[in-house]
Length: 546
Image 1 (spheres, rainbow, N blue to C red):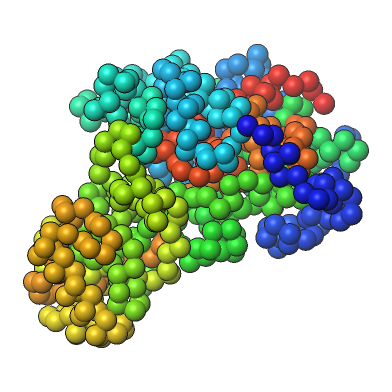
Image 2: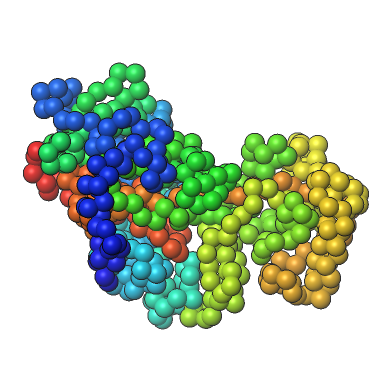
C-alpha cells in the first residue's frame, strides 16, 4: 500500500505549510476543533523541575482500552508504575454500555485479508496486520488475566468447512469467516458469579494491581506537556480543581474515545449534529482538541457506528426502544419524514440484516450494518434527518413496535407516541401533510398485499401493513453508537504528526483514532481496545525513560 505521506502529498508539503502558518494549528479552526483549547500551539511547555508527580506510563481514559493498557503495564512492566486517569466519576464513554463482544481469530492472515476488504484503503496494511495478529492473542490473554472461561460466551472462528456457522457483518466478502466472538460473563447457560462484562472484569483486574497502578477518577486531562525543542510528550496536566503536572517517563497513552457528545464536531465531520448517541456522556472530543494543538494528523473523522432512526419519546428526551435492540421493532410499521413520505429502507436498527450467502452479491442486499445501509449498490452512512416518525397500527403494537410498559399503560398515555383512530387524524398530530401520509400508508399497504416493497426492497418478512386502528406515530431521531475518527495511529500504537512521523512519547488505543475508516465489523471495537491497549502499553514500556 502506498505510504500515507506519499498518497496525501500536496503541492505545498505539510512541513512547509506548518512553517508558513507558524505552527498555529491550536488557535485556528482549520480542523474544526477549536474553541475549547487553552492558548499555545505545542501543548504546555516542559519544565523538568516543576513536576508534581511522576510515573513510568500515564494512561488517559478508564474504558476498555485504558484498562487493558494499564493492566498490561502492571503485568508486563517489571515493576513499572502506571497512572490511569478517568474524566468521570466512573467511566462513561462507550465501554460500559457496549454489548462486550470481541472478535478473535486463529487465522490472523485470513482475517487480515477480510479487514483489507472492509478498509477500502483507509487504513495502512501494517496497522491492520498488527490488529489481526492481536486478535489472535486476546482470547488467551484474558484467560491469562484470570477470566472464568466457563462463564464466557464463546463462538469459535469458522473455517471454509463451517461457513454456515459464521455470521460476519459483511459475510458476502471473501475470508469473512475467519473469526469468532467472545464475551466475558455472558454465558446464558450457567450462573455467572464473576464479572458480567469485559469492562467490569478489567477494572477488577486493575484493582488487584494497585501497588503499581494508581487509578484516579474525576481526573480529566487538561493538556499534554511537550519538550519545546524536540516535541516529545513528557507528561500531562490533569485534574479538575487541583491540576497537577505529571511526568510520564516512558509515554502517555490516549484512550479517550470519540466525540459523540460534541454536537459541533458531529455536525462538522459527520453532518449529524442532532444525532443522539446511545452510550455515555463523557466523550466530548477533549483529546482531539489537545492533539490538534501539538500537530497530530487525523483520520477517519467521517466514520461512525451509525446512523439509524431510533424510537424516542415525544419530547425527544429518552429512548422508548433500546438503541441496541433485536428483533428490530421497525419491522412492524414504516418510517416517514416530516413530509409524510418514506425516504429510505426503513427496517433499520444498529445491526439488522438477513444472513445472506457467503460470497453473494451484496449490492442488492438490504439491512443496517451498524448504520451502514445499501444505497446505490454500496453501503455508506445515510444522511439521516433530525426528525422522523415511526408509523404503525394496533397489530404492530401487539407484535412489539414499542416494548410494553410495566404498568400496562398505552404508548400515548406514557408520552411515547401519538395515537389516533384514522391516518388523517394521526397526520394532524404529527404535523405532517395529511394527503402525503395517507398516500404513503396506502402505497405501503398495497406493497404488503402484493408481498413486495417496490420502493425500498424491504424483506418480505418485514412487510407489516398499517391497517388496524388505533394508529400510532413514534418520534424517531438519528442514532448511533460511536465515532471512529481521531489521531492517526501507527502499527505500534504511536500517534503520528502531519509528516507521518511518530510524536515521541504519545500513543493511542481504542476508538480514539480507530482503525475503522470505512465498513465496520461488529465486535471489532472491543477487540481494538484490547489489542491496541496492549500494543501501545508494550511500546511505551519498550521506550527509554526521558
